[in-house]
Image (cartoon, rainbow, N blue to C red):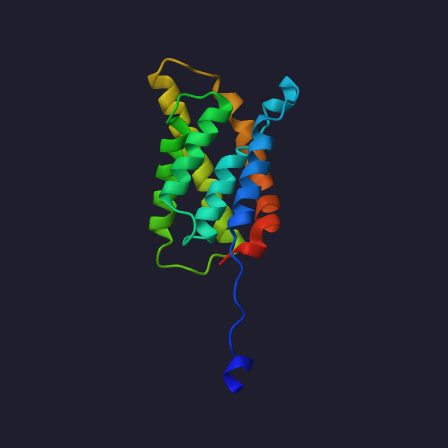
Length: 163
């Protein structure tokens, strides 16, 4: 009888919230908006992937990042595997550098997101240059700024299901 009182409460599985966040992120990724506003569209799928990989490492790992990257490539009509490879590299690097540190504060996660967004932008730019598709450099900064500004919203919407 005493043991029942001191049992730890069972944590809920975050699977439904992972699926819901991916659905919402995919809607935000492909929702039609005007051309001027579309230049500021943040990298929502990459940020959601990064959140789940960092905050639910037992549920989401490199394979999750790969699947999310393929899904993002299919959604955005990008070359198949471009975002997948970028997500896997970002995920592997982020998990490698924080494998010892499990106390991830909001500021730590925001700095990791900042570095991840820069790495993503550089990787996408390099692959596009290799394939001969090039956009002006100034067109890459609005999504960077909007992604940094949307990270706190993603974090505070999903932080309830962190480990």
